[in-house]
Image (tube, rainbow, N blue to C red; front, side, top):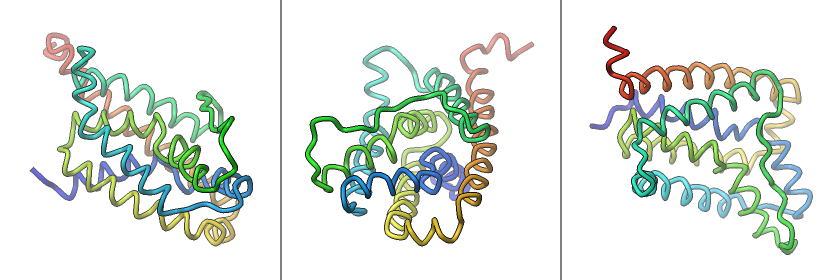
Length: 203
């Protein structure tokens, strides 16, 4: 069943996780190092990674004996801590965005680290798999595609957006979506923990 409301909710979760607006300083740093970036290439690679985990993620979980709802509960903790990072301005996760041994080809930098892990990082992949406990694949796929539209627009207009919002504006926006993500992570936890412990929820 395809519902636009579900697409909207999934879109907000992924938008908060990808945090492409908050990632503008990182994008500028990558562009400075590489000389230029390729927005279309970065977006398509990110899309491919997300869609792969959307359709094959459950099979991968099944191989190790984990159901989607158990993963959703675990994923809610990851999203919770990412939200704390965004809201409180602290650093809990450290992802290696360096690419030692790679050439200075801007096409390479558009894939690593821009497509992965800046856009389609571990948090995004966790969110996609966790969302499967609440929404259908077509709904999540639509949310992913809508986010990729936003991503490519931001990559094309990075300098203009940074000037428009300013440093303070970027920080405020990041914190606002951090609070939204915090609430979403709590809802995701509460909505799935009852399925794992049905006896406890009955009391």
